[in-house]
Length: 258
Image (cartoon, rainbow, N blue to C red; front, side):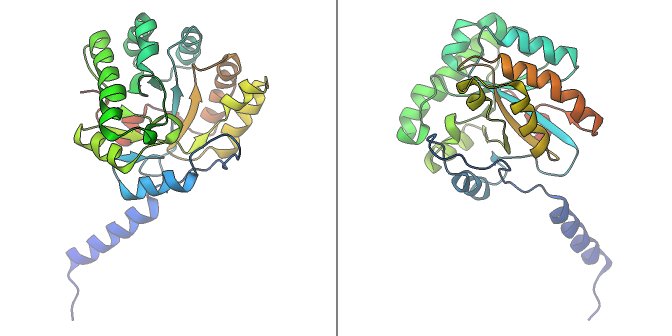
């Protein structure tokens, strides 16, 4: 039996795609004793909701998305200065209650070209809520807050702690939103807890950097001077390795606002 040229090209293209597709896998190890969601649960969610729940980008481009959670806060403006210094854009997953407190910072970040994402209203474990309560108390109010401040609502949602039920994931899909996890947890939250040094955060990023990584950091929820200093230090080193820094929506090729 002869195999058509078109079929051969199709098979080759699919093989190439599979060979270059990024694995939806969290690279940094699990830490016991911190009430974290098991990594396998997040990875399963990415498999079950492929194209809607993301841990990393879809390919192997030498690009990276830096993300910051829990703001905006009094630390955010200093972080924005560092990002401007290095001429890069990041993605901020912010809480509705914080956006209400610092609306001008929200406007400044968006005007500077950064992407704004929804991180819930007040940071609950989402799966402990019913899907309807999750929507009415966390998603909808926060979307309305960003709409009132920016004139648009985000399409990207990061579940606090990475915790999200299947029903809540389906609800996000219905609302044309993407769930964004991370492939690299810098543990800047643990460094802040332990009053550690910026070099600890920098070391994690450099050790676990990979093409199309989504990197988790924070500009809220605690003291963030070490995070800001680490960002200032590791960006030039990763640029020297050939990395380009882009926002999550550009990494995934999706709209960042609706």
